[in-house]
Image 1 (cartoon, rainbow, N blue to C red):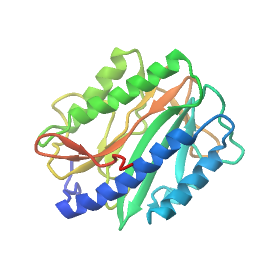
Image 2: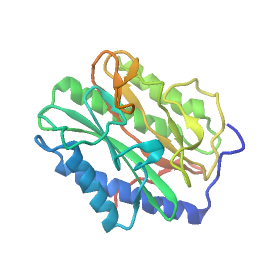
Image 3: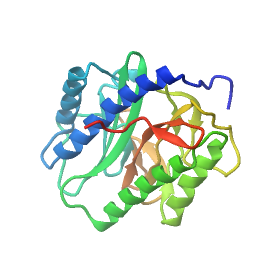
Image 4: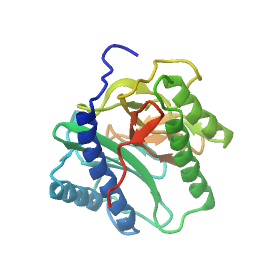
Length: 254
């Protein structure tokens, strides 16, 4: 961990909590909205409108040229799926919704994977274990613990359930920028890596594959998919490090 890692003040954390609340609220609404026949472009349009209502700016739009306000990744798509009016959700899909918002220059970032209609038991188990990986990663966060503790907790649970972890994409520090120091890998060795300090803010985001860990990127230059075509799931929270543990900054207010 280098000197670029920022520790946020109480006032700064309060604004990040607002941004995170906007993200979480819109994800809650999306969870009840998405259904078979809906296009990913319609999801993007909904998010744009909801951001306006809340006086927030999109975190992802035009970030390194990304054309949407939300990443919508279906089935074997891991992350960075581009919303499109031509992309239609189907029964039994699982869909990753990765979303961010900015308030007064401070960022919130969170992701969920949702089921479209009735999904297979295997897909449900992948989603459940990925959410548990996030919970275990967050549980390893407290003042004085190490980045490797977080990765180890995530990796251990995923592998114990027969899954693999994406290594090309990792969690990250977050605050006045979407991506700050330090990187937060979803794998690692306990007791290694930089120390976490009260006031640091990080986004933890396990991406878990049903098959192999290999990743490839589609011709659009953005959408990352599993190389073997098997399912992938993604969950994420922005958290603040506290003396006793962690605080989730991306909790819904509705």
